[in-house]
Image 1: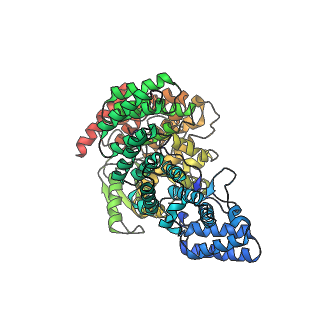
Image 2: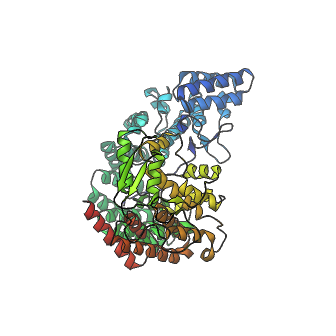
Image 3: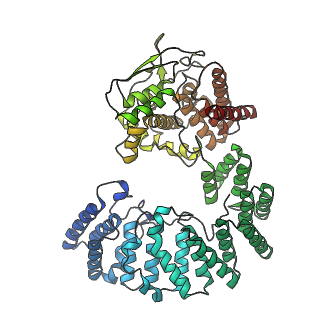
Length: 627
C-alpha cells in the first residue's frame, strides 16, 4: 500500500485534455484519435481559420487555430495566426477562449489561451494554464510550444503562484510519470530548479516542487527540497512530502519516525493516520497499520480515506475478495470518495479482476504458431486433435484461416458437448455424432455487432465497472447478443484491432463473447432477478456445452454480483456448482477452462469456503503442472 495525500499530493483533474470538446469541435478531435498526419491536419485547420478570419468570423477562426495547436502544439504558423487573432480582437484575444458548460476546456483552446496570456504579460496565469494542459497530456510536447517559457521568465513569476502551479500539476500527473513522457515536462522541471534557487527559503515552493520532481524520478532533488522545507518551517505539508520522498528512496524507517512524531503534534490529521497505516502495511506490518487506520475511523467514521484504506489493507493481507466487495459497497454509498475508486482499481489485477483470461487450448496454441509463420488467409491447413476442445477455439482459428480443417480422434467422458442442465438458450449445438459444433442462433443485427465491437476492451479497472460499461448494450435484442457469441464481429481497423486480427484472433473472440454476455446481464434489467430472462439466459449459457461462452456467462453473473448485493448468494451458488462440475470432469479429461473458472470462483462475492479452498488448490496444482 502506498501512502497518499489527497489534500496536497493527489490525483484530481479539472477537465483539461483531448477528451473535452470546445464550442465547435467534438471531444477528442485530432491526431490522438489516429486521424491522418498531425502536421497535415494542423495546416488544414489553419486554412479554415484563414478563411473564417477573412470573412470576419474571428471566433470561428479561433476554434480552428486551437484545433491546429492540438494537432501540432509547436507549429510556427499556428502561433503566427494566433498572434494575428490577438491583434484584431479586444483584450488581446483573451475572451476568444474559455471553459465549456461543464467547466472543462479543450486542450488546444487552453494552450491558445495560455499563449495569449503570456503575450499580454500575465505570465503566472499563462504558466498555470499551460502546465495543466501538459499535466493532462504528458505524451505531448506542450512546453516546446512556448517560446516564452525560458530563463527570462524567472523574474516575472511570483513564487507563491508558481508553487500553486506545481501543486496543480502533481494533482494530475502519475507518480511516477512514465519515462517516455518526462522529456516533455523537462522545461517545467528546469524552471522549478531556477525558482527554488532564486527563492531558497520559500517553504511552499520547496515542498510543492519536491512533489513534482518526485514524479519525474528526480529523487535527489525531491528529497533535498522537501527536507529544506521541513527544516525551515516544520509544516505538516512539508513533513508529508518529505516522507513520500524518503519512501521512494527506501527510507521507510525515517518516514515512519517522522510521521509518528508529526502526529504527536497534529493528532487531528486523520489523513496522515491513514498514510502511516498504509506505510506500515506495505512493510507487512498489517496489525500496526490497521491500528493507525482504525484511530482515524474512530475519530471520523465517515472519513473518505480511512474506510477505504481499511478494506485495502485487509485485501493486501488476506487476498479475500470480500474486502474488494466492501470497497465496491463503500463506493455505492459514497461515490464521491475518490480514494476508494483508486484502491479498488489498484487492487484488481489478473484474469477476470482486470482483464480477459488468455485462451489455453491446443487449437489456440496452434493458431499462434501458424500466425508466426504465415499471414491470415485462405491457406489449406488441416490438423488432428487427440481430444475434442471447446468450439469457440475452432471459431477463433477459422476467423483467421477460414479453410482450416480439423479431425478429432476422441470425445472423452464426460462429453463436453452435452449441457449440464437443460435450457432454453444456447450458443452451440452438435448434430448427432458430430464433433464440429454449429451456431445455435443466427447472425446478429449489424448494429448490435458494431455496438459490442465498440465497447469490447480487453481490460477494465474492476468487474463492477465492466458491468457498468455494458449498460450501453441494454437496448440490444437478446437474440442479437446471443448471435454475437457465435458470429463475432471482426476487429476494427485501428492499430489495436489490426493487432488482434494479425496476432491474437483467439483473444479477440474471447473478449467479444465476454462483453456480449455482460450485455445480456442488462437485458430487461427491470425484471426481478430470480425469474428474469437475463438470469435464465446466462445460466443456460454457463451450464450449456463446455465452451468459452460458459465462463463468459459466469463472469457476467459475477460482475453483476459485484454491484448488486441481492444477487450475490444466488450467483455464488451457481458459480460454485459450475466449477465443481469442471473439477469433476477434470478427473477423467482435460478441461481447458478449469483455471479461468477457478480464478472466477476466487473473484465471486460470498463464495462458499469449500469452493474457495478448492479453487486455490486447483490453481496451485495447475501452476505446478505447468512448471
